[in-house]
Image (cartoon, rainbow, N blue to C red):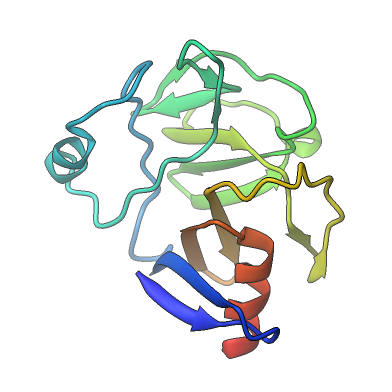
Length: 166
């Protein structure tokens, strides 16, 4: 975990995993519905160097939107305000794109549908806040193979602060 100061003088607690997609692959573990007390053991067993809880869930614990884990799809593509994009991996690398531009094809071995986009084309995207500070997972890329996975209570402020701190 990293604690950094924001330009506004606030302290942000952020869990970060930085990686180069030329040396790392994206993996999705589908742990099934409900809380899994042994998720850390499952991450170790899969030889993953970092893990985050990504995506949204229905009240019954099933994922909201499409999930592909180890090449096996569960659920289906869903539409709705928070589900604006997909993060996925295939033999060519890791990809992040808007849902409208995405087409499902054979060979995708890891995918999670999520959103909302917080930054696009270098600019903050206006999103409606519910006024509640909730822990969120976020992803960022420079489109040159450098990726960042993170988790924090304030992802929009965290992304801006990380970008500004170099």
